[in-house]
Length: 192
Image 1 (cartoon, rainbow, N blue to C red):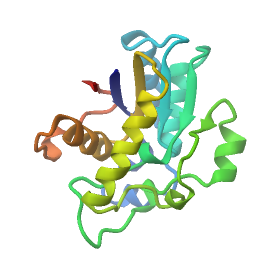
Image 2 (cartoon, helix red, strand yellow):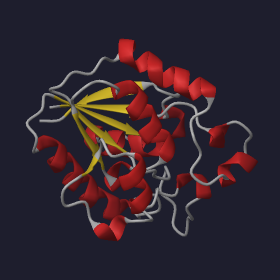
Image 3 (tube, rainbow, N blue to C red):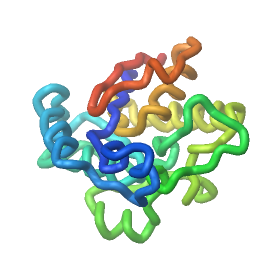
Image 4 (cartoon, one colour):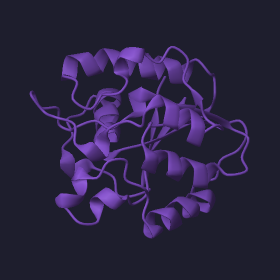
């Protein structure tokens, strides 16, 4: 199975650092909207693909623009949510990385479904501040969820720290923040 991790387009929370990190539910910027649209040609989807998206506004906007008009399966999954990398004890979730509440997800993103068996204990905090050992078990669960669909390709629209955490887990290589992807950059990992 191919897992293709895509970082969301430019969000409002990255424009005026560090103050912008305190925005709640930041949207894509105009540049981010354009970046998401370019994914349609650089990484085209088809109906056989599976798309999993972090429950944040900027990732769902990226995925919605990219997948518009494509009848692929589209899931919202908290295990694709923001993650601090590297993990730090006593870390706190910034307002820009809080998950959207369930009611807003249901009303604003009706063409996405909630991943089955996504643990209700992960709402609203998600995986952002989980210690490494707690994340490792949930990462195994997430990979198993992706494999359960027997899809050749699984696309995950998520965040730089989340991508790097899964990359490190899957590749068994030590990574750093220097390994973060840029906006709408992607990396393909093969999972047996």
